[in-house]
Image (cartoon, rainbow, N blue to C red; front, side, top):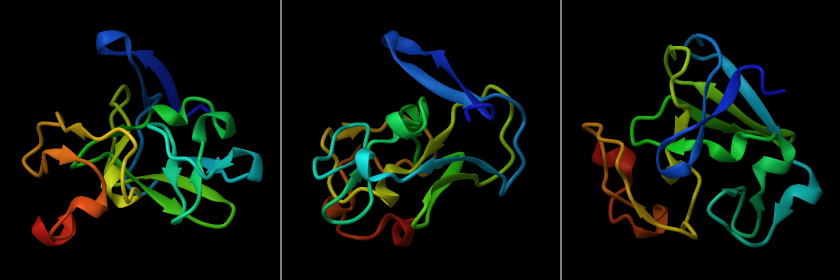
Length: 141
């Protein structure tokens, strides 16, 4: 299942997932199945919000997927369906590139807000969730 990505050590003892091979724009990189046993009412730093009441624990469904990083100019997007969440490439991704998505596209209020360090020109700074925006980031960009 994880053949399109691999888990590697990163800074400060953290781990990230990187592209295991070159990926082309719009390619579906992996799918995280949505199963009842992986859905929780509680948000954590590794869950993905499904709706106002439910959060997916991606790691048990697809090991490594919980390590998707945030970027304000991410490598991919999460595409939701009833069966699962697909990570789809926004652009060509080089082998070894850290896989990321914009957490503000899925989270109302992060359980662990943080100061973004993506360093991109579009960086919005504090990542706390959509709840804290005065203007939608898509409109502000």
